[in-house]
Amino acid sequence: MNLYQHFRKEEHAFIDQVLEWKQTVENQYSPKLTDFLDPREQEIVKQVIGTNGEILVDFFGGKDGLERKRALLYPTYFEPNEDDYHLAFFEVKYPVKFVTVDHRKVLGSLMSLGLKRTKFGDILTQDEQIQIVVANEIADYVRMNLTAVGKATISLSEINSTDLLEVNEEWTEQTVTVSSLRLDVVLSSILNLSRQKVQVLIENGLVKVNWKKIEQTSFECKETDVLSVRGYGRSKLHSIEGKTKKEKWRIIVGRQK
Image (tube, rainbow, N blue to C red; front, side, top):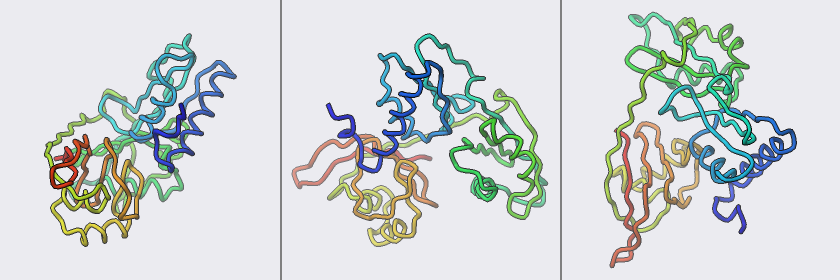
């Protein structure tokens, strides 16, 4: 059976990467730790590695419920623990009475340091509290260089994984009908926006599918796709139920509260 037939064409290069990781573990008979992966990449790794072979895989991003995680591929003899994922955790300290610091500003500041997005995990926010998860190998660099977020002067305080904020995601489910599974059509129905408005959002790079920017309005959605639109939150295509008598697709979607 052709492994690639179950995935979109744009995911094939990542599958090749996963197969290389697997081969490395088989050849060296020792664990292989990846950078941070988004949930779609984690799902691909799970499917490629499987659960019954000589190579196993686990994921960890700091605590249960976090989105971005490092993968650890390892031979069956190996028993992984949290230390094997080489993570560091920081709390952002800043003058909360005078400035506002949010997820997007922290993300932009980290990227402006020349860091790849794959080198840090979730950015957790709750009221004025902000925490970040990073790979150990860049922790010292981040501590020394992340001294400002926007116009706010900040400092970083290292914390333990047990100090990380709780993650509470709530989703509401709804059933909608759409004339096609095109991205613009699906989002128009879910968000209750005109198709023209959605097309502008897509073309302006404000829409992601499975954590990857998509700028083609005709992109075809599939089951389990996670759709995010800047300013409108996140949706998930739980299932495609088939066609109605009027030849429309009935889909079940979740909207994040």
